Amino acid sequence: MRRSPIQDKNRLLEKTTPLTSKDKKLFAYFGVEAKILPPLRILNPQRITIGDRTAIREGCHINAFIDLSFLMDYIDPIYRDHFSREQYLYDPRIEIEREVQIGRFAFMSCTRSILIERNVVLSERVFIGDNNHSFSHPEVPIVQQPNKPGIPVVIGRGSWIGVGAAILAGTRLGRNCVVGSNSICRGEEFPSHVVIGPESAKILFHRHETDDY
Image (cartoon, rainbow, N blue to C red):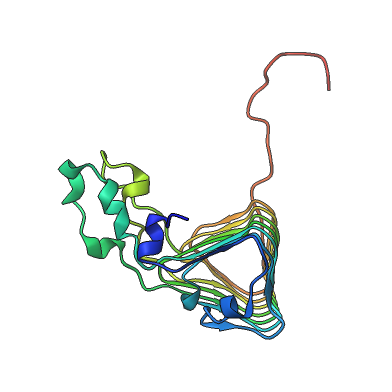
């Protein structure tokens, strides 16, 4: 099977079957009675800690990016020297502490640090990212531009993150916080015991004038 370009500079663990004992040894630490259910895609597990009795449901994509310099090969040669290889190199750490519950289709993107403290619950389809693609160059496709240096993310112990929430770079949640469904936390620091929610849905305009309620 042909290796993908990302595998030349990174370790990719992608499986549709349960993790073996050998797979678990690839992680910086893989806890007692911890589990990650397949299918799964984990980039650079050696930079990822999974705490004791933590459970991650199906469909996770957990990315600790180390070297994305292969993206430079796709840049139009006219613009390639507008970037340096160092911009595509990162030093990530993802730490998921003990007794964390992570729902299906979790997506994490890390170039520096993501910390999920103990007893946190992530519902389905939660995104956590300490970085994003840069988009400063007007002519180079965004996917080919380097990721930004990460700003650490911390999710405090005992917190609950609702379905479809996004926790973005620089966000720090205190302990026992509630983040409502589809909320976006944009790099702020939140104290412990707060409830965070998105704006309620509202009418934007009427498509037709009727007498209906």
